[in-house]
Length: 314
Image (cartoon, rainbow, N blue to C red):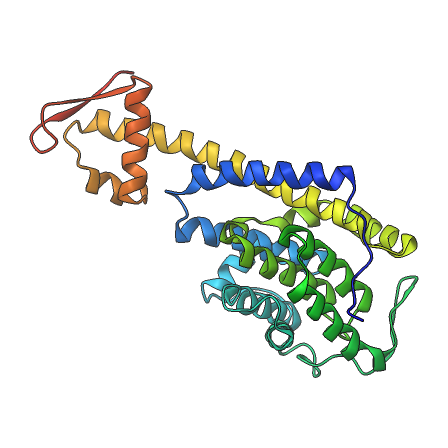
């Protein structure tokens, strides 16, 4: 008989799932012209800082950025190794197959390289995490095979599958170390396979800001005997990360509008190519801002695109 993790689809789960879909649609249309390498890098750094801080590595975004840029920082060898492992593991986010157990083992090997001698291998010892006694070591391999089999064959929505998997993974606690980091990474892998826009979300940083609730949701699910409280919590975190990104993009839009208007006011004959270079936006992104400013009657174009000039209305 195939294994199915225990969980209940509650009204709260349905409402959160619907809201996430709605907000994700907004994010798609609001960022279609701005999914630049800079935006991806910024949110990836937030993700790395968040997932590492949950595990006690407090180097922070500034030092992680420096390490990412190949610079030396003042930190212990283990702290640097943890950051480097996380950077390399998340760099392969698009390459992992969410339902391939060997990819998960490879991700753990990359993540924990230089930290754990058994990186990339399931634990061979019994462990207790707080009050939770994890399944015996000799059961881990079979439990993980069953979990991945369910992940591959289940008809449940990927959004819910990612949360359920995350909880079940932490319950099994398959590695001797790095379970929290790899569990959060693999939920991102599952979500990214469903919709690449999830890779833009710094969900791990939102979890970090709600760390006590994160652990309580894990504990509540274990006490209940099903992942439902954890699924509700994670959906709430995903929704919050989308809303945070939308808010950040809105502020970025406002700055871009003002900067482009100022440049046009200083040089009424500035070209679109020149604007792209100065504000570090794509041509389609700049044109989108210009259309928006024209619609708002804050900008007009006098004459032809080649020989004319911009008229700023404010």
